[in-house]
Image 1 (cartoon, rainbow, N blue to C red):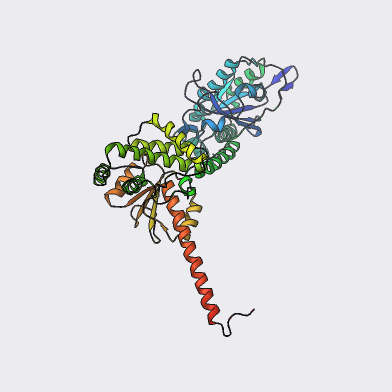
Image 2: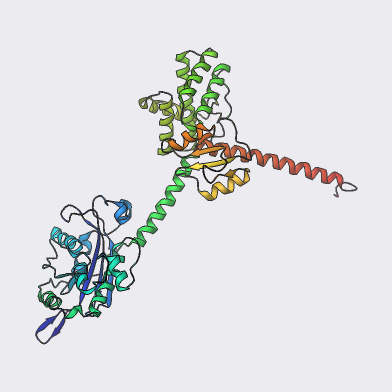
Length: 463
């Protein structure tokens, strides 16, 4: 609170302010994080306040402040904290490192809101004061000044770290006698004389970076679960097995098509091979188009059977259709046919062969933002006797990608070396097949061993 000596108001100290913003212009951009350190006349921090703010628009450059739109969606807005901020600044000299920037944003936010009506802030800038009180600093950035003053400054971005560092720098200046400088004395006198609103303020709701990190982690975990479920449609679709039931020639064509699409890319050579295969099997061009549509319908049916089609599944379906020259406009009709097939209780022709199976002992390299976690991969691949390759310089037998477009360079590298390429859903389905096969073989071996042991016991088994 303001100190009264006789009839004269005395400045109680300083308020150190630091902000992170959505951009560089106070008139076009907003504060996204603010921190205020109240200090006494010696520079000791007596109160600290920080919160993220909802800028009610884009968060701006995440590389600058490390915050995404979702991180500040639950934060208070500036009007919610304005009364408390006015309380923290009342009758104090407002200090910042590069004050014209930070305090310029604060003043513009008060002007934008219109209340509480605050007087022009009395300011001091630790950056501008550095040549006088810290001439040994090689530069006058906050980090360089703090290092020259031998005061702690927290690493990383964030208004809170900047406010604490600036407060320590302020205390260093004051210890060197800055408070006795005439313009510092004048600043305190002017700050104490300003007419501030007298309305009391309650501590507002705050939402800190720690809160944002907890919320972000929860969102990421929920998204991981959702994506993991989305890529498991082929893994779950055990009703779809080797190609049967369409006809000998079409079955052969669909099996080769399925193998060609295990990486979701039909190369120019594969396109030629498929066309020649169709001719050799007596399949006309029109029949071939029908089979391509049947393949996409069966793929959609496997998705529907696993649950509602998610955006990753829709993207996969769209990618396959594009490789086969099927327009997007036809996808909705094919998806409806697939849904009808599943609702009628049968999977239709079993045409998803899933390519040739995986074999134990292979080395698998993963690339891209996979939905399956590292822990699950390590556990399941150990069960299947597969090894995870650590890089392109390791032995690599199979490359698994989350998105063939984003991993185009890596898939090109693999194809040039004859390395098999699989998209994540196909790999997970083949991995499940291999796990089941090894489990069945292990069970059979256990039964044989038990039978052999029983025959080896003298007198047979005891009842």
